[in-house]
Image (cartoon, rainbow, N blue to C red):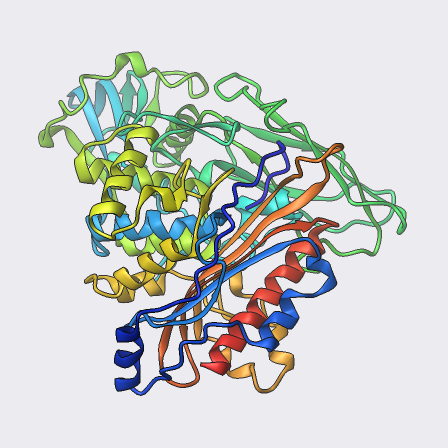
Length: 555
């Protein structure tokens, strides 16, 4: 989503492409489409783009017929622009193509040592992380991954979130139950997380991502409303001795501001106490009486703490799950993950395996990544792709591998994009042509239908759930449920003196099942919009939703 941490220079190459091959036009006409060569953007769409809020901003758009490639509308499709999380279209496409929709990640637990007649393991238990994004913590009864309209991964950025229903520790509890069922009652040794699947990488100056996760590496704090002058009641999850929460957040006067302060402000003040005997997150500040939180318009108010040492945190969580299952571990539950005691990587034998957690089909992970724009998940997806493709273990080598794939498989030149991670962080750019080329190529892949299903649907789910303003026009209402597209939001500072906040990019790209019956591929973004608050983002969301609906109607 957005970050206002550093000023960045826009990377723009102002070119304009407004032509198409005559053969494409003839082919389209033979399929029942228009054979016109005018790719000018219609006035109904330009009226949205010319709103006063976008004065000085730059719009880019391309719309093509998915099958023929016929260009319908074009506005600066050759310009390199900020695309933010639209970048996830690339990382999830490559992973889906190489790994496959039905692949299931398996996270095993191994015993090291012997178990005596009393059920005592003299040795260690080792959980080998697989990069499972949810570890059973979002599992619905039907096996799908639970999502909400406002995901907790962006709670602190946008002011609130909706929490999913499943127990975020469900997978760890399941593993612990299997260990107990194997006959182990006591671990006279330690519990270790083997997090060597890939090299840990820095995530946006917050922490180093490893292949083990608990609740998306977050602790959720949910506050209920209180009377003026009173502390807000709260609960937090997961509950663990590894990290606890205290709060002095108080309801102030109706005219007071929402001023919620967490003692964790990246990148200057990371909360790095995970693994210490007392690790506490503190919440302070005030909220106005009688004023509901942002986005949801109702309590609870959700804020999150980042777990900055995932492996150490997961170790404690697993030991606590073992205790609930009746298995005692003699080692201290709260301490640094003892990686020095791990055996050589890949040396585990099947005879040592005593538990395993099997994830949902991989398509569900990709759906999670795209529907709610899960940044860490997209970065791990890129790593999983690199590992599956050629054993790439670092972010840099995975990006290099992807670059080769985009050139050889999709025909997308490296000069058409600039990717720095798998999720669309920072100065991520591309031109419309690169995005459209990817979208069109995916239609020929065996998992194309699955790929489309991973995308948010206009007015229905994911990050497009709340985009409903277009429905005020009865002629556009039919677009609901007909636009399948990835959103992208990126905030930053201008390169002026003094710098000012900007919505550097609000982007939208994917597929439209047009009113005419044709399926279209489209790319749309606005760069460098003056930022006046959360409403800037929300208004841009609605306006791009309206433009998508106009495309649906006109084509």
